[in-house]
Image (cartoon, rainbow, N blue to C red; front, side, top):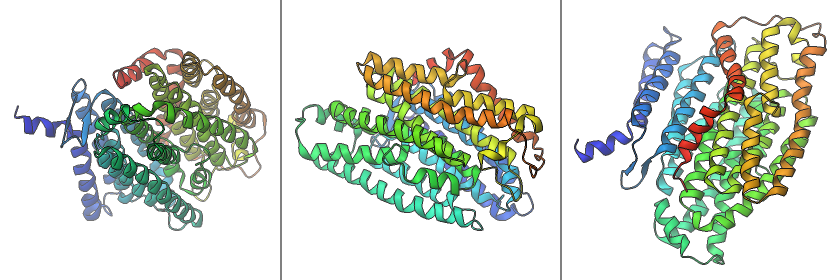
Length: 481
């Protein structure tokens, strides 16, 4: 094949998603009023097509577009998990969006452009391409959060997210500009080569690493850069919250890989210490404050902060096994958060948001199967065996102990025990409390129910057989360091 054409084929999944996002936009413009499901069906086809194209690329590696684009194992695997996350959001979304009058093609167009931003971040070989992907994702997220214009809370959440997100993007961009000023290149691998020969006491380099770490921490939702998460998760439509808690976390993990592992490994000791602090603060803030929450979306928001802290344990380890365990954890968290918010979507109905923990009272009497699925999700988030959440925590603990941070693993274990309280409280409410007198019937939704069943049972199956998923994550991270 012509080398020029071969390089274009490296980016064929991204080209496909971009083309189909434009096609969904035009199709909805001309036929959306007549075919309400057209945009959703085209989105599902887009995701399936992208997955096929990505699978065909497995095993290939290289760079193209003057080093802006990198194709490697991590690119392929991270993109596949991103497709899965967006697909689950689409399957959960239909009835919720219809009930609120926002079942429109623009939602799916924004989801596809957000996915494209994640793909560009994952495959970025340059500071420029990574930042462009980040901003494409961020702008799509701002619009999605504020999309439900009849909701004051959604509008307020969108504004908060936009202001804080712009600040975080500025911090990240400033750190990138300092790196460019020091090294004279935008290519992350060239930056890494230059940093190896640079003295660790370089004050400008220290500031660059600090600003980049702060920007990444915001995108992950790590404390103390977590201020946006509770308000945005609660205020956004639950469909959007399910998306925010899943696929973008894979994109944020890609920022760590591309900017700090590929691009800043010469400064590993500096950024490792920053992430040690982020880990401890995230574990404490997420797991302690979640105990006081009565709104389940806010509880899951603080839970997110805690889970990011557990994931960062693998990053702190700084080894190939540590990065693989962190990637495994972020994938498992994505599946758990999709199932958790999917259950909230399923229990909600027109005019009623199942946002309070009390709304789940007596769910075992009203819908025994839903209660069982939610119990699996809560057990997995708490890290109770044999769910996959247990093995995700075990993997990062093993990695951080092997790296010599035994005290950090002890802190993680103690806070995991504390965090189990608020997860088990939900199980207690479902199984031991009586339904509220005004508890309405749960509207039947076969498609979402089937998707949720598969999603939740996968947490149990992967817990019994975690090997294949763990091996897939190790495959993705092999050769990164």
